[in-house]
Length: 200
Image (cartoon, rainbow, N blue to C red; front, side, top):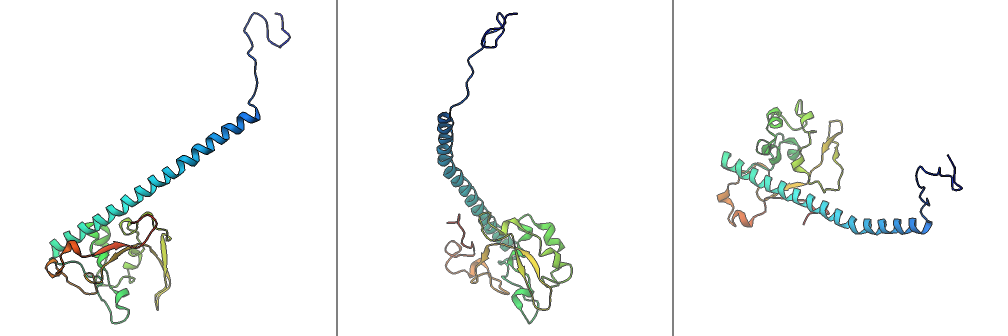
């Protein structure tokens, strides 16, 4: 078998001229990829922000439905806070969020709560550390948990949330009915989200 000067055996195959990429070609390719990424990144971020905003709006819709279902079952909206003791009344009782658990697909958690006790007492202590995704918008920039340091108790962590109830309807020991809302429910704010980057 004869070997040609270019290192290829004669009569078997033809050797193609092999050459690598030049530095200019590599730089142009990197520049094109960079421009495409710069164009696509805002679109991806916008799509993610829209998805998070839609999730927040859907969560608020679920809260509104749960409040109305609770009203249908109990003939009033839940209380903003049920007072359990003379000191620190707001922290000692359960709020409207706990009352809505059976109506937001969190019935098993609701069944475990001993409402005869305060929130951070006995078996309830572990339950208040359970996160409920409905209470927190996915675009919220705060940490997933917050630290609580109650008087006469060791500090502990609680899941964070940003669903707020109106003090005009969901106040302590309230029993507000739809008929009590003189301006009409369509003109009255009952629950909302605190400020965040993707909420309007």
